[in-house]
Image (cartoon, rainbow, N blue to C red; front, side, top):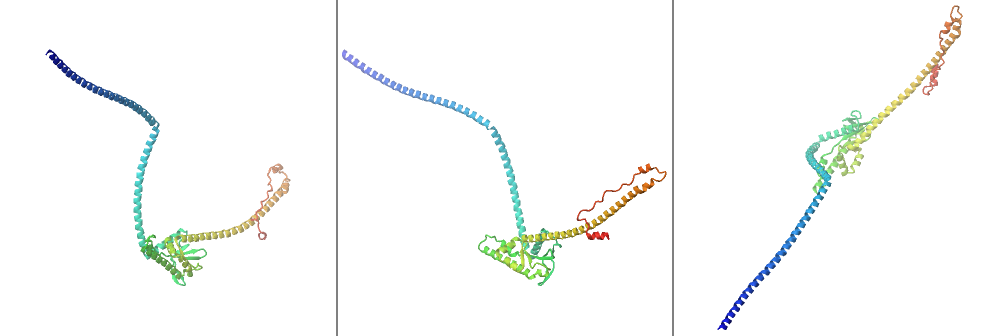
Length: 407
């Protein structure tokens, strides 16, 4: 029993010890596991701390580098700003100039806009005036007045004088009857040229209202109107040719001038019908626009000037010959005066010689006369200077004048 108790006790002890050891071993294993976990966590914390320290160090270094770089950049910027200070001032002045130019441009744009508005208004007025003029020129009376006014302006601008170099509305009686051309231009030599102003505008104005680029019916209409315009000009040419104004003028060139008061009116007719000019020439009618009529009249004015110069030259020639003849007569009289003066000098010298050699010699022989006083008396001196003769051939008298002077 004791052994059993002992064995039981020993067994209980062993079992208790095993259980305690097992529990201790379990506790030890848990602690070790916790310790290992704590160590691992501590190791991870140390690694994290190391990384945080490295990151903090890198951050600090980066901040120092950034601060250094910012300092250097600020220094460079300050240096650049200091170096670019004149440029900044120039840019500032340029900016001010640009602003001023911008203001000026805006003002100019405003002025241009105002001028454009004024130009539009003037264009509208001009268009209205043109339409009014075109409407007025459709009247035969207005066209006649306009043509006569244009003709008078061109004649006066060429330098011709009214009622001297030209006459207006002068009646002429010719083989075809009586007529009244708009103007007679007088030429040197007593001749004249008849000028008649014609303004065929009806068809021309209608044709010009259609643009040249028109197509279709408008182009056909424009061509028909131009042909009608050519027919009107031909009709004026034929009418002037029948009047034959040159037959009623003395020594007049055998043609009459048909004045068209607009270059475009005549050029349009000639462009449409090039044979119109030859037709007018064949009928002794000269078609004239303001340009070539002014050239012709300027030539007439120059001819009158040359005529006046020629007349003045003839007058001067006659006056020169008359003056030359009278200078010869004057030289004859001067020669007679010279001979008279020479005879007077000879008579005077003879008087002085007789006084000295005869009168005074006899006077000194009178008794009671102081001869010294006679010696002190100044005797007249003789004249030894000769009279200058005329030597110019123009002033020498001819043989006839010498004979007439001797007679």
